[in-house]
Structures are given as structure tokens and as C-alpha cells.
Length: 130
Length: 191
Image 1: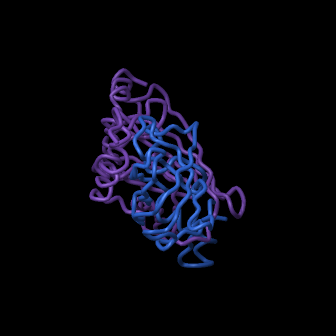
Image 2: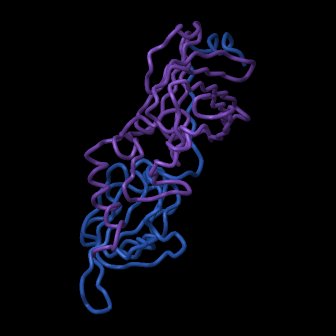
């Protein structure tokens, strides 16, 4: 189709395309991407913001201490496109989530990049993963 | 790479690629919310829109809400100012939109691992629909001051029914995310 034909059909032609799988806003250098772990506890917050959504949760350790974890997700747009919203969880909800943990043992993990989100279960109900 | 480009590449501390790190990152997008530049913006997994008007094709990128204008009825100025996205002129070769861009500044990376370029950068992008739902972007990078010969890249994008959304790069949000998520993963891992 040449330009003149396009113009004759419509004054403005708009095409929207999306990139396929790729790394997101930053890489995964800080995480152990070979070993997903499962954490469970209580949601204390949910940041629905760029560059990445973040789940805050308190996890009770084997010794009975409460450890505060942060789980990184994809950007709000990517999460929204697989069916999540800012109301997907709220403080006080019970959560079970898979995550790739920080290599250095810090209580931080990545639970989703772009459209590949790991398992997240809120009050017994799984959230969309892709 | 020329010796200059090789040294520059070695000094990159990217969060992506074979030398990926979360420590001391000097990626200009990550650090300053600088525009991602061309062709690096195609490394990011966000959408783009091609908007054709009679004299100009606009390329709207969802990531950082960057947009470019491609002039369809003129050539390049003789000595264009150096800008983040350069001066783009376009033409159709049958079913392919060919975009020729010069006049870049030297502040962006060509890709996530941090390959540099100079203001002599010349990029030709070829946009073609392989089928109704697939857009192919072939690009040729030529920068004789940084690379001993031109090289090419290819990106495939799928059509999307989802409207373009807001993915601005905000320094305050980036800084908050870095302190909250990235910094704790660096070093000994204080808990």
C-alpha cells in the first residue's frame, strides 16, 4: 500500500503495536532467577505505581519473628493488561506468593516481569499470571 | 567497535546484559530518566503507535511517552542541530515505511548493555507489516566514529487492542523504587 492510497482512505491512519517479551524497566541482576521461593504472610501495602508495582507483606519466620518483604511486579500498565487492578489486594489480606529472591538474602524479590507474573494468591484466590 | 567506543562500552554499568549490575548503575534512562533514544527504545516491552497524517508520520512510544515526527515531504536540513531523537525523514518503498534519521546527540545508549554512539549516528528504520497483526522493524546503525562497519537489528511487534497507557519516567518514582527495591539487593544484604 503506498502513501497516496493510505491518505485517500483516511486523513489519519493509526496502528498500535506491542513489543514481545523483553526485559522491563530494569534488569534482574540483583535476583536469583534460578530459584523461585514461596513466601506467605499478610499484605501491609500495595503500590500501584511506575516504574513497578510493589507488594508489601509481613512474613512470620520459623523463629516467630516478623520479617517485612517487598515483592516487585511489572508496571501498572502491564499488570492491568493481564487483569490486575489497584484493588487486587489490600492491607490485611492473606497472601501466598512465589518470587525470585535477592541474591544477597535481603527480603526483596521479583514476582513479575511484564506479562509473566508468578503465582500470587490472595485470601485463597489466585490472581491472573499472564 | 572503535577504540573510543570500546572504552566507553567498558565504562557502562548497565542493569541489563552480560555485565548487568544493580550497583553504581550509570544507565542514563535509569539514572536520569533521559529519553531512551533510537533504537534502544525497541528494547523496552511497551507499545507504540504509528500515526499517519498527510505530511508527517508520528511515532508515539508508550514508554516515557516519547514521540517522534517523520517528515514525509522534505529532506534533512544541511546541518541539523543535535537532538535526543534526531531529524527524521521518511518515504514509502511499496509496503515499507523507510525512516532515515541523523542529527542525534551522543547522550543515549544504542541498547540495554550500553553500546555508545557519537553525534555522527545515522539510523535507517524499515517498518513493514509482515501480516495484519505483525509489524517488523529492521534498523541499520551506521556510526563510523564508533563502529568500524554498519550493523543491523530486527524487532517484531504484535498488534494490540489495548489503548496506550501512562508510563512516564518520573525521577521521584524512580528514586523511590531504587531506594526501596534495588538498593537492598546490593552489598551484604542488611535485613
